[in-house]
Image 1 (tube, one colour):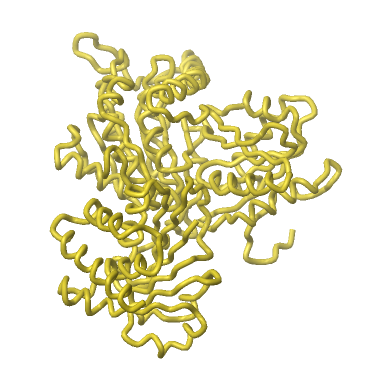
Image 2 (cartoon, chains in turn yellow, orange):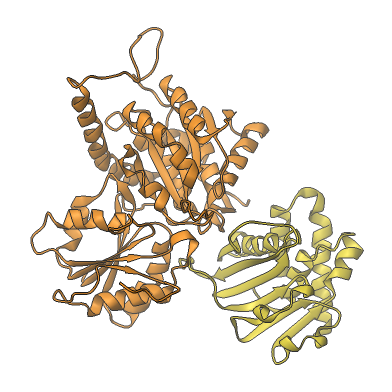
Length: 180
Length: 396
């Protein structure tokens, strides 16, 4: 089972991307997935978590997620000790940042950084970085194939924003692949 | 959406199930964590994919009253609620079951105030067991959709005519997105034809509904209502089989046994915690420890006979309750013990209260429950009601 924890702020789409990834795996790769937000009230700007679990078999375990293989940070202002909590050995943190080296908390972890905000501003004209961070995650992992994520965006997002988000996804994917 | 598969939340699964059942009227008042059910159904009515009247009522009491009005003319009614909303309906719940109106309602299981909490537990529906409604508890989104359809089939059976409550754990099920197979509308129509009943207001055949009674006849009406609930046991088993034959998914009817053969210790669970317990049972079995799981699907009618049958070769039974009757024990535990009192040499039972107000029940918690059951002996004076996952020392 692969577990992904998304950190963002209300309104940045961190739960939407948890759901997009789950849909991509479940609908286009014959896998099973669960996607859920941190339970409770939702407020714009407040820190929120999203979770995606992906597995070859049906996922029965409904208890709280305590560990994860990947942590994805949509917003670097959320950095604190909770970000690395529960990260498995060999786990990876993917952070939206131009300068991840300045965060001591991340020292000793596998860190992949991408300037997702610039990609989002360039293509979407808004600092909504969820699909960029999905592209980055797919570039460093094999949680789903890029084509599956494209199909996931096509089926789950509003028609009017599908094309731009696929562009963002691919741009982020290529950016991270190029760096590696 | 690809083919007939989609990736949706438990709330959305209920809305899709309700749409397939073709209710004539939906009367509902939104409340967390049920809100998305109401939102989706109102969108379906708006976009024309569901031909129904959507009534925006001013309270849950009105939602239930309207549903009774709908059912009283022989039409199909759907509503949904949660927690304080269910309690606000309480008067109507008894009214609807006494009037024998086969209304179907989704309830998102949520804690009751005070302390006020939007998080999940089963205090709300467990407090309404005497309201005369059938109560099923589901484990995932697929079962939520399937039971929303089966609910009408069971409730509208002429030997049952009893309202039906489909319970989903708040957030854990209502707000988790997962893979869902959506049945084909034509097949659902074959399975669940239009509701036809004699129990309605009819200009051609006038009769009295929601009548009053005197001491001379009240008991007889209540006896009939009691027998209808008992009759529903057979109907539930038959509908589970028929649904499985048609759509390929069987749930076991009143209960599901999971690895109970040769188990000396059983754990009884209700709702979504069953899934987590399955994982623990699998892990313990792989270590050679013979433990089993009973997924108690229905609280009304209560599957007493099945519980007795399963308990014959068992030493100990643990019961998880996500509710408590303060000063006594969990409601499920009381029911299990009542059933076991009707057998000779009944197993030792221990109650585990947990998961209240959204508290997690972890795999470790469930493993500890099994360990505690395995080591206890009949002579042990161990507390029969234990609290799991407590954040403080308790002095009892």
